[in-house]
Length: 238
Length: 120
Image 1 (tube, one colour):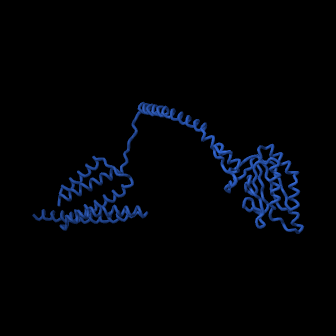
Image 2: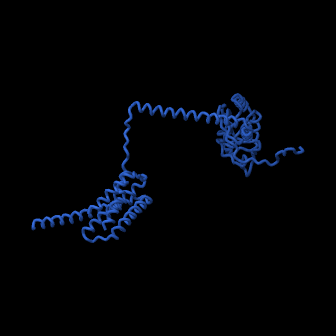
Image 3: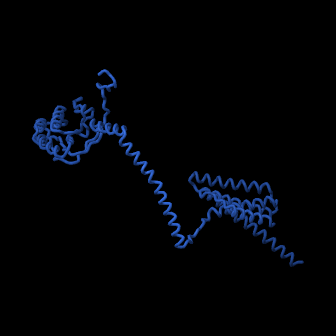
């Protein structure tokens, strides 16, 4: 009986000791004087300079790799790809340009004639051609980017741009040009263009805002299908 | 009589000398196990004084109580309820009761021996 009691007492004591040690936080007081502290500081500084020395060659290596990468073929290909993407209209574009707002003519409504609900595709097509004629670079109608293959047509009495129905009037047409001077020119030309008269005959008014340095045009969202083009095979008899 | 006390001291010395530390998150379990062990120890002393001591009951009770308490704490942690408080409460109450009983037994023993001494 005594043996088991003793054994269990020992186990309890052991557990208590461990618990005590776990709970008790070791309090270590810093008793170093100023010279010892300086010594420690010096040691740390040496370590720091050593680490810096180690970092330097690695940094150099990194820079070397970087420059190698920028000069490589891959980078050139990437740049070309990006350029093509911009040209095809797959990226968002911000630049100087003007905003045109197409809205119904309010005076007309008072006369009792039905209010124009949409813009006819022909009208938009003419506007687009006119804008392109006056050196517009990127165009978006009602937030829909126009690219080379964009179609504006009438489907079931709704004007659609690449399958996207344009909203009710007023709608916004954003145009971005190469620079602010071209934007200015475009603005002046649009102000006296025939388009305005054409719009007015359909009870629509074309408001032209003065040039702004930052007009943002969204990217073209639909996939571009290439149907009648094929890559040239190298060494082919073309 | 002194053997258990010596065992306790040896255990404490061993624990302090080995400098074992358990991780912070398990200290809850250990504390409850210590409580269970203490409870069993005092229960054993009481039983011994009341002459109903059974070694099997004592040893099995010791390990079983520890395991039960630890698993209760474990369950409590996983349920998000502080179930180990239940164990703390139960063991605490029993600890007090056991110690009170031990005290009374010792007091009666002491007074009877004193009376005997006076009589003789």
